[in-house]
Image 1 (cartoon, helix red, strand yellow):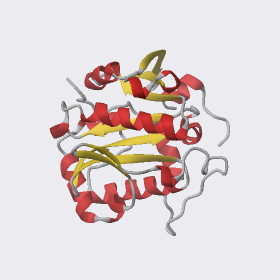
Image 2 (image 1 turned 180 degrees about the horizontal axis):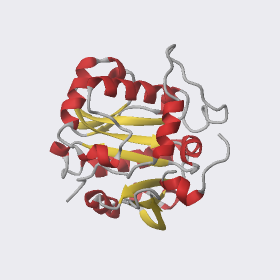
Image 3 (image 1 turned 90 degrees about the vertical axis):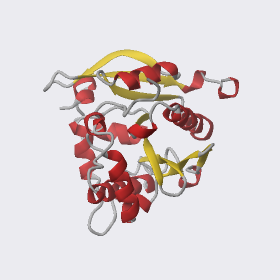
Image 4 (image 1 turned 135 degrees about the vertical axis):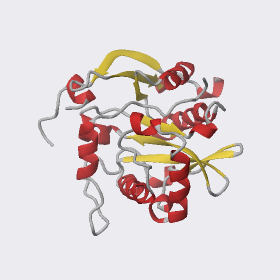
Length: 248
């Protein structure tokens, strides 16, 4: 039983920007990701009520941010060994990613390819999408992942939009992640009519907690506790329906 299973009950059926973010999404999410992983023939199955309900692929466009851009996650990291090697080298500078996002295995080129092949397959089916934070053609600075209510309901019995993110250590403290999250929040509200977005942050991730305090995220009263380890994560909510991005 993971953090959100403990809090909500298990389903019967089925310095600035120095963060690697959201706390672990629990063993239950990991089991769900394994159950929806790519099979030998390269296809995955998805509940019909999830597919296409929340976004379409043509909404996932590149987002410019000066010298940095957000590139929608596609098959490059799944198929290109040179890109996988670059991400592996950068991830080695930030070992805390494994602590705060245990299902994101960036330790080897093979694990990177496997993870992003599965992720991109789920994007095509409407489960979740994300962006690589990039500079130039080959510069990977980090990632941001967006999970739909359908995916979260299936994985952790929490039918809400949520985000995970990580930024490699050499690029922390420059405001990159703050800008990234702001841009993604704008897309979620303006193009997908999302009213609320949640984030789960390990209580030890002080840098991420400070960053979210500067963004329009409100700390929620719930504390998510792993019943096996006693470790805690904090729940934050961004009320997008209350934000006027044109005035910010």
